[in-house]
Image 1: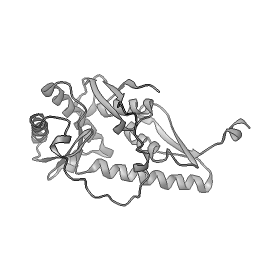
Image 2: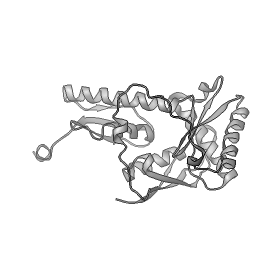
Image 3: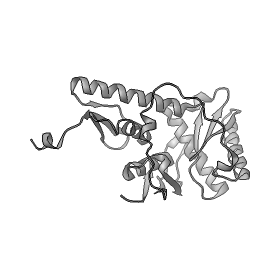
Image 4: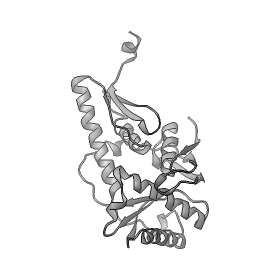
Length: 244
């Protein structure tokens, strides 16, 4: 298995997910370096693609699948990270959170920024009216994250990707996709017919793949190209059946 991959995408997040698919690794098992932030236009319109270098951590890819196959019951919020666990120095972290507040200020919204994760650094934005910045299936949020990381790179220099969330949308979306994947897998088991999901961005397709990766009855693969790439859930086929 390759230990590092360079990948491109419309946004930093899309490039990372393309690399993860090629490596066959989870997000927690790798480190990310933004090689080129591209020249993305406002809300993802126009510009050149982003290029990232994704490398497996020295200890190898940890087993994260079980976390994706846990109960669908809501999990308790994680405690605020300890300062010693933060990937940026405190002064840099202050600059990063202030930059995000200023970003939303220029969008006409006064927000609170909270650190909710450290690997990668995750910043959750909350405030009146911020839900409007999520967009359909998170498209506006992904564009905001791209533009923010571009600004942060110019301010701090080279840095790991900072994930931006709004009101916990990303976590809720992941829980929704995980539950949907399991329900559709049950349907495939019941009637034996493959199901093709609607087109999804790379990081959402990956959630489906990871959720069903250890299912003994069904398998998943992606089909299509570009924005029309979709996940197919189908019954597992044994080697003997495949040869018939």
